[in-house]
Length: 206
View 1 (cartoon, helix red, strand yellow):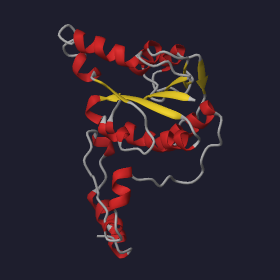
View 2 (spheres, helix red, strand yellow; view 1 turned 45 degrees about the vertical axis):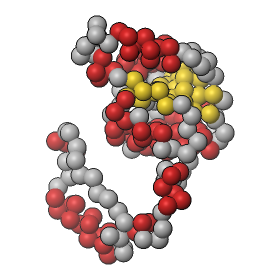
View 3 (cartoon, rainbow, N blue to C red; view 1 turned 60 degrees about the vertical axis):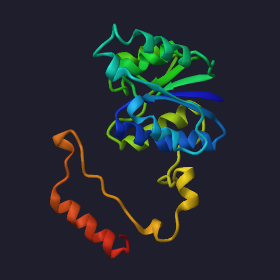
View 4 (cartoon, rainbow, N blue to C red; view 1 turned 120 degrees about the horizontal axis):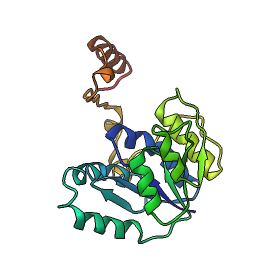
């Protein structure tokens, strides 16, 4: 199946979708991806990904008149391919609009599952995925329901294709902690970071 994934932003949302997209690719589906321009390099790192179509929604909404030429160019790129399915895995009005503009039947979260319920009315098929789960699990369950394969039960392990060949034993024992976040409610207490670092060091990581 030729599949277009619409998962535009933000950084964490794009990263959370990677395992689900990897699941789809592993089941033989050809996947293209619409993503906010600032994050376009992330889907491109995924082995087996097809076209990555950047969108500048955040920039365009500030200067809509000046951005008309870019918008038309994006629309031409979006509609250059006819898809078997266009999957909006974000569930927002803005992503639903892109889904409607793409060439292919739309699918996504049902109105009871989408972050913005009105988005679900843009899809031919909506799927009810239980809330209150980790975002990675919700994404994987949505893709499995839409594409008809069993939802994976194990945590995914994958790496960018370019990095896999270069990673030696030393590189595999290094860990990088990224603590920055925009929302105050997402900040982790310093004591927990220290404990995580202690556990990682005890397990032999640098």
